[in-house]
Length: 596
Ligand code: F6R
Image 1 (cartoon, rainbow, N blue to C red):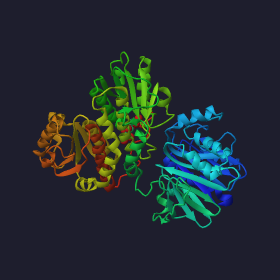
Image 2 (cartoon, protein in one colour):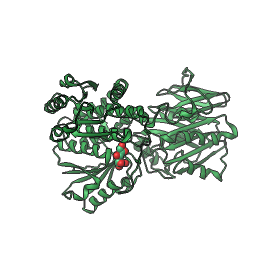
Image 3 (tube, rainbow, N blue to C red):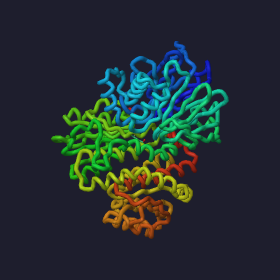
Image 4 (cartoon, protein in one colour):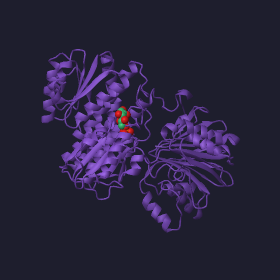
């Protein structure tokens, strides 16, 4: 997830407008940034780091040109370096392109272009686009047709903006990544999100998948893939510029919870072949570990517990360790793989455990959201979860994407009998999750229990890590006492804490033995007069003993965990909101914990 801006008609203020727009889009990515202005030629400036680095790089330069594009990056292909920062150019420096999304067929296109004599200067998938435009221009197409021709070769998700030397226009195309035009008198803008230009105009045109836009001195036009004009509605946004960055949500965390279906699509995109019933992930090679040790902290540890369960289900011995306790683990043996799960890739405890594993001769892998992070650089393999930037300190969408990525890892490195069933469940997961988010009764549950003394969460099997994560989220953002337990463990002591003032959230999915046993544990709770909130697909009879029900659609046990967790995230969010907590920056916490 990156941020794109384009602007036509601001004259001498064009560059400032672009940089201002990028600063409003920094929530979408902030590991490198750049701008390109088109006049007779292309003037370009880009740098690794946040927008302030770009401002510094621009301080002693003046970029000539009357139209321009800009980009703030969240790396997916290649680490955050000056060279990988956007815009990217063709061989002659006559074309500049910025891109958000993932071009799935980039390697094939790149091989073809290199074979035809093009020179590449970055590791990105994006760079194929300016070279394709270059070829189309050389074949005699005008710039607009050249962009259309180049885009017709792309597979995957993209929002693209391009400028061409000698043409006072910005060209854009969209497929599965957002793009919106901002319409003002005498000026037109293009961006990944409205905040980028909301300070200048409230009139917007949302592009749909498959549409192209041209912004020039005469205004704007939108066309389809064959160049036919598309009539668009100009909408008016009804929120203030101050709300920028959160896309209208009250908190980044709420926005990130709602971004989960999209983040999951990004995680799965191009990695699952449903027809063949197989999973294909770059950088895994032919890994087939004889055992797996997971190391992680906090939320990522809960994902690691889930990951270990996936491997055990496939008959591979696997265990999850708190990274800070890994020193006490039995050393990995034989072909064992040690997998660090860490959204930031910078958590000191996890880095230290991975280094210890390497010293013991193990192969290491990181499952992370952060390209170019220390863990990604140091491990033998990196599997990116592609969740996009997470600004809220408490992890939300990165947890769901970790679970999805761990499923891919397990499917890609082991053999299980129900691979097709799991792949189908993963395919349906983003849509199922959208339904859960749209219909969740979590706010009403939060309203009922906002004044409770403490909250307990129980689950078995794949739902045990969900219970732990539900409790962690509740603690972190509400500052209330919360504990998660394996359902069967409650009666071995913690039941003493259960009263009529302590709601128990029971995650019960499926109709097998695990569900039946958890329903038994729920009855024990009910007998102590504790309110019960069942998070369930309705296949067991837990609802009979529940005061409230948070429903999820029927799915595989593994994907049910992601859906159940979304309800629990929403409950914690709404309790915290009702208590007036600082949800995006809870007390005493940091997004990346770089001390042991
Ligand atoms: C919980 C949370 C922390 C992190 C933990 C590990 O919401 O954010 O518990 O999960 O500090 O961080 P990463 O995943 O970056 O290693």
